[in-house]
Length: 456
Image (cartoon, rainbow, N blue to C red; front, side, top):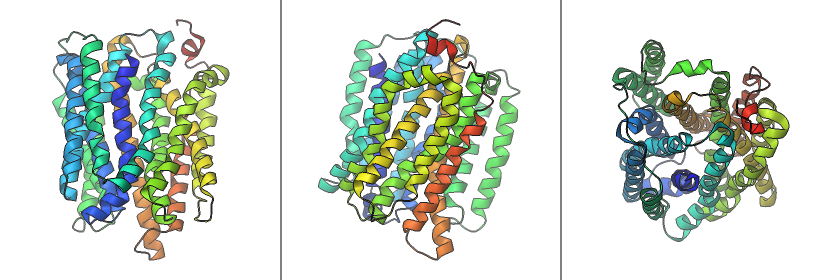
């Protein structure tokens, strides 16, 4: 069951990495600057984040298996539309539809598993769940590069179609259905506030200082986004069945992965966007060459998964979250030193090490987050934590893109050069490093019942 659910994660991760690799070719085809094409990534991530809070309620109301299958179908159809897009507006619309499918696909798939396992099985199941999903980013860069060079950037979306059809068949035949329940009515006001706030913030971050909207509009969107965010938090804290249940943050083992993981994921989320652009625009590599080097990150992530259980049992969740954040930040900072004179083998090694450390951190965060969540709160926890997972990834792309734009503006350049990529990588490294002090408050025995295999 974990492997079947992971097929959805495989499709989602494959899509994310092939799109990043194909971004320069997409920009040329659609007549857009490569940096501006980052909206093709952020649109998907924003739509994903906006609709995730509803996923837990929908799964409870209509049945997790049925919703999971509908989400896979939506994601697959939207991928076909992405491959048919002829301009940026059509691409943005298709990516938004993909985000709707993804918002229901991965959280609901995870919920199918969480409701069937014991706490002492959580680490093992999390590892097996994420390992097949890591095949997506492992294969994504080289496959995306080859498809872009040999066929077209459109082919990177069409490969989701057979994967989605296979996933639908496996879910239908093998995974047993969870009976639907009658949850309280959804918090429509909260969902509206959360969705509007996130959309306004992401639109502001994506357009601020770039001249894409009339003067003053990005600033108004930014102010509205922060105001609506504060109002959404206030509302959710005072509603019996809120869109996002912030009372879960009272659980220490949930709060630390939520807060420290937020800044870590922003910094880490900048890397998949920056690396292909650095190799193709800075080094002059082709999409295929860039993909063959970029996949080192996913290779390192895949190699770390079997070692994650040993590391957590040996050092504990708290120590791993503190010191591994430092190591991950150092590997991102090392990317800032990339120059065209570097041998590709050296770039490969740096990316491989970065993949190792970031993979260990994600496994740690994702396992600890659900360690002490009561069974009746799993749907709410899945919605809140999945939102906290996806929003930083979108912010990571926005932060990286904005860092490039600011550096280019200061230097008076019209196109991104290596010093601009250096600045963007250093910003990502600093954000990743901030996760270390935010993890210090975690209890020293956090997650002990998981790594020891004992019930608590």
